[in-house]
Image (cartoon, rainbow, N blue to C red; front, side, top):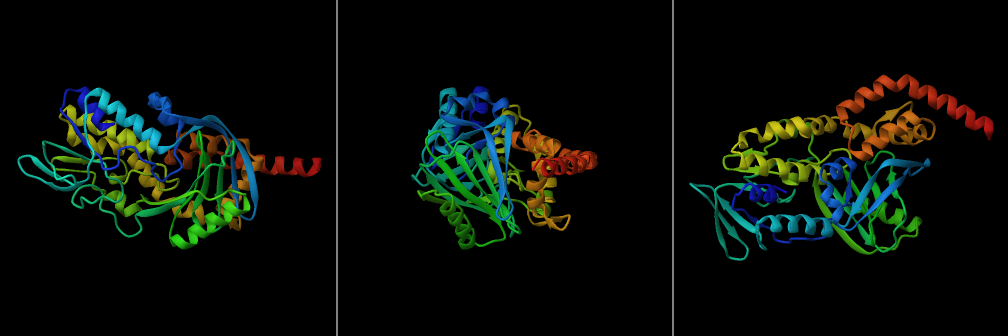
Length: 364
């Protein structure tokens, strides 16, 4: 995204990428907010899904129709689309890993292919496992989550989200166009225990294991958002390398694309000093607020039961709450607005739950 913006503005741009298009470990969901803003992503093979099952281990599930479908991509296909778009615009691609980036009158970049490249400016998009420690977010203890899972040929027609009481994370089952990504992401639990949860879920649902994957995702704690290092002298960081991932859902595709576009545009305009302010105003401030909620969302309690269990129970009876969750799936409801909306509608939501729950019992 950054390279496309730069070459469109007439800036000579080299895109250095060790893997190019690859099957990045994640569900691959692209929200309505992302594909409405960047409709060209629909040119990559994908699956449009408008139905979800949200469940918790010991309290069953609830079906939720999505009025704005989620598009599910294989990351290899989506990455290839973005790379091809940059190349068509005029970017030059080097298939290599940057092993060193030295500042000076110009940046001197050394690559794993033995090459040397000089550049006036560097955009860092190396993910959470950033080997260039002096550039991009400085991850501290607690600032990452683990994602792991399997690709399998058994794909269901809907999205399945599974919560567990006391676990800060969730399982996903996302159907792609020719396979499914079934995985788990979370914090504060060891990989062995998370993998056990996932494999038990797959066994109970008759899902065979395929290719295994594991990865680290940013999940910044609140203090880290306040001091997040996304820019410096002659460089900007975008996507995961800037920590730009939703601390609650782990979603990062939209933030990677948007930060890349903003970075390229501002560099081309000579306004790099505006980058942090721009991403803060658009979404980073809201993600920082989300970091204050994440732990409580998954492990907190409401009315003497786990928040996630109450969510399932309330979704069964409240159209208002279902509307709010639909907006969360679409990516159109900021977390600050979510808090205001829930507080302002709580009384009406509880009335819906009480009336609809009573009527359901009467009918039964």
